[in-house]
Amino acid sequence: MKAPLCLAFLSCCLLFLSSCGDMTNAIPGPPFVYDDFGVEPAVSRLLGPKGKDTQVVARFGTTKKTPPAEGPDIRFVNMEQAMFFLRHTVRNLPKTPENAALRQRLSKTYSRLYWNYSSRRNAFMASPSASYGRGGMNRAFMMPPMPPSI
Image 1 (spheres, one colour):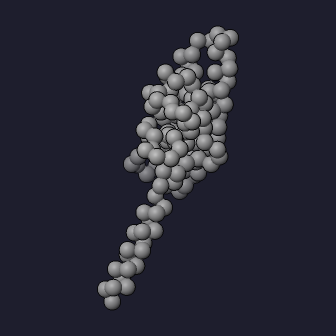
Image 2 (cartoon, one colour; image 1 turned 90 degrees about the vertical axis):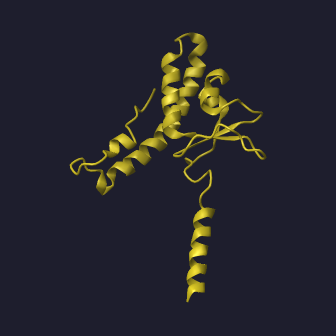
Image 3 (cartoon, one colour; image 1 turned 120 degrees about the vertical axis):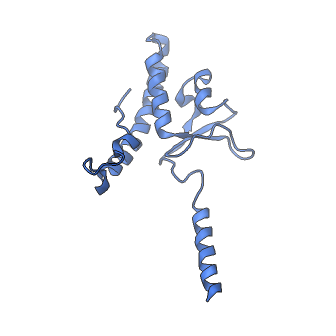
C-alpha cells in the first residue's frame, strides 16, 4: 500500500519540477534583442552587460541579469520592471532629432509588452475574487494599470 502511494507522490513531484523552467511565464512571440531596450550604458542596469548575441525574454517572473554559463546568451526581464524602465527612459530622453529613432524603437518595445501585460491584467481582474468590497489586498495593486503608450 505504501509503495504505490510513494511512487505516485514521487511521480507528481517530478512532473511538477519538470514544468518549472525559465520559460514558464514568458510572453508569447520571439524574444527581444538587447538593443530594443535602449543603449547599453542605460540598459546594463536592467539587463547587465551586453554579450555577443544577447536575447531578452520578457516574462511574469523575476529578472535574471546573468547569462547562463553555457548555451545562448538569454536574459530574462520582469514584465512590469521592463515597462517602468522603458517609460522612465523615454521620459528622460532629450527630444532631439538624433533620438527620434531610439524613441520609436523603445515605444515599439513598450507597445509589444503592453499588449501582453494588459491581456493578462484583464484576465486577472475579471476573476470573481477581484471585487473591491471584501477587504484584504486590492488586486489592482498587484498588477497596476499601465498607460497604453509611452
